[in-house]
View 1: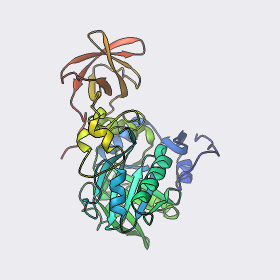
View 2: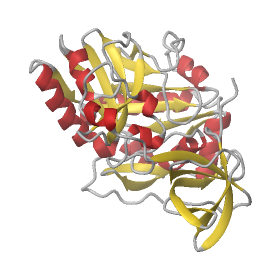
View 3: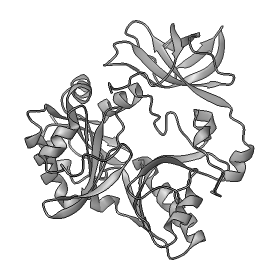
View 4: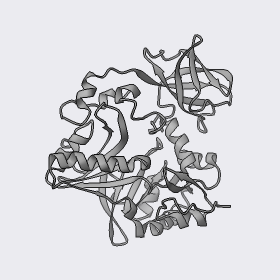
Length: 368
């Protein structure tokens, strides 16, 4: 039985679809979101073997436009946005004056003078405030428009994603490269189709007006039936992204950590001036983010202590019994110098020490 929605929570345009399907709804970053419809494992496996569909409408959609939009966004992010071609996307970070990570996000260039920033739901207000402030310092005529509440995002992810997208009428949009975006049409209205995702599989994210969301959701269910399309909630999205070695803000990333602290120092480009650039040019990495593989069925969880030769060296940031691989995996933040791949560490799992081995990430990579 679905839970009664909390009237104090924000809702996506697809709430009725989730309720009709009997989804378990939870408070996620202030939004009433489906955590699962059936079982976490079933939904996870659907994305790995067939195709899964997600409501991502809680994520921020911030449109930036103006003649100086590129220069304004250069001031915002650790990577330059003026060099990105129209139709391309870039994963980047917003940092504070000290170089701490305020959010990790994706920036799409829609036109020479127009961008779309897709940020984490939990950081939407921070990102809107900081992007508005920083862009105005470059040019007060740059427009920053938070359209999150008027928009929706539907993700189609998995080996059969292209097939489903074509069947839904997006045949002209599916040939774009990974980390690209294009304009398309759905029932007479413009939508944006991006080849991006957070699952480790090939897939697409469709950005559209809120009033068209339920209709597109139902179309995907109808045309994707033969391909095995499955409604998917936030729980399996988390296990999918962890298998793919992708960080989650609030687990692997925070304002106390710099990009170098999480192994992403190479993303920082000092060929442009951005908020935090001076601090990052002097700030040394303190930690490393490592992958761990265990044996058996007991998974380490976020907060578990990491020990090396009896000495505490770090903490697990995310952990799960991998549905795809069949063994425990985890990401952990450890102090430098980081242990080499192949090193055995001891993890405190609910009061009992459990060995795990340092491995390369991602844990899972889709077949090419």
